[in-house]
Length: 142
Image (cartoon, rainbow, N blue to C red; front, side, top):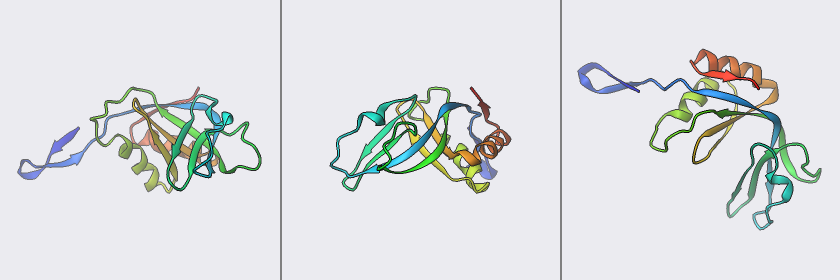
């Protein structure tokens, strides 16, 4: 939602309140060579994301089951925006990441056709939930 500023111009963006839910698993962000096929372990769990570029095959997946020799950063928890989002909406991701950035909480974000996901390090999860609630969002723990 936008609020008119002085002179009738649009000046303030007020993001909608979002409902987020915590996914049950711990996740990892993995890096494989760009020419590798997508491994079977990469597509298990409530969320997996595979992105191939000329430089890498990047995988976000459940941490459990990843082979030891895979380059990864683990111990991420995932918050899912619980409502389906229209692709024309603006500022949704910003309404989540800006308060977290202001609180010095690093995030890794994913967007799908229907919704957005935020990954935060497990040791920062409680603080991230607190910050998101202070920003007006509802976070449910499953």
